[in-house]
Length: 467
Image (cartoon, rainbow, N blue to C red; front, side, top):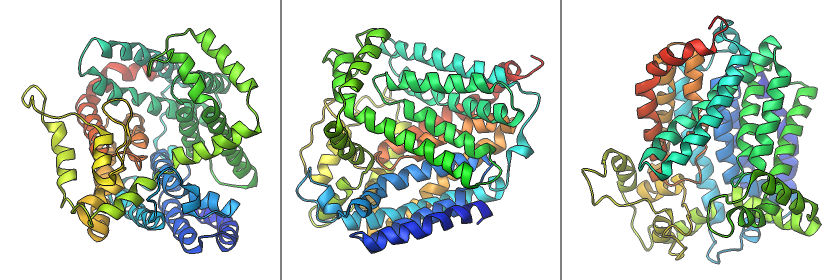
């Protein structure tokens, strides 16, 4: 464990212990802190952008498992008093315990696969002064607007959406470098922060809450350039975290009415102009009051927390349905190696149908809604409460070896980090079914790996000062 990781754990330990003692679930609180401590001790490494990416991805999983443990300690509510939508939620603490142990195993697998090659790199070792801050920022903007246009084509070209999703995430690697270069060389900082502000504004007034992506990637950039954590920097990071939480709270309070307005009541599409959207957002913000924000707090916690379906599944598997003995993972991998042209009877992915099978809740599906059971729940269904843990360590190692593969096979570390940055989205996956976890992984890894050298040859010169 490095010095800064120890410092963060030390800062958190006392208030966490007080909260655990005063709260309604001491043992669960301590297990949650253990899981967080493992993630921090393994992956909290300043000036190491790859480990910063992995740290935030794992921290997001931790939040999905434990945010209601934290909230319960603050307001004095047990988990079963916070979850009330479904009635058969008797095993929430079991789901929380299994998930925390599973996350520790996944994190260990990821670390063991990456530590030898990647744990000790710093930006001082890998930064290349021949790249231009301004050109990197311009490339990021071009990619952002370019992929926005290309996504329109998915209506006319079947199957292109999967490829676009894979390559569109590369822009975040470009942005991380833009942030690092601007702060490392103290150049074009105003342009950088203008881009960040514009991204947040555009993301906040769009159909989806995409503003959170730029904030998270900015936080990755911040840790990638810091030398140490002191009181001032910890305060700034805390302000960034609180600001993100407040934005999320406000968005949650207005999103239902706002999305209804954007789509005209017709699904996930936008039928109004940008100006009309902004005016509607301003109108909704002016109408916020304490009651709406209180309701939004519960909604936001429900949105982030994702152990409820797991707790219901524990009641049904294996007492009603047997464990699948690896069938879910096997099908999740094979599904993406069966081109529909050769397998016309291949089914479609219906998250709700899969969730209904093991929770028996009868949730809406068939494209009307999507309810995912979560990959860790799938691991439990597949392998049971014991063998799921070595499997999760193995799964973490798979992701880790893929990260190392890009580090080893890229032309330089500038491009390696561009290719590795999307792993934040591939690893912050607690709420995704195993089918989607493996699908996103496979459909990113294969196409990007095979065109990485083409991308380097065609575009590297555009990032350089002398280009």
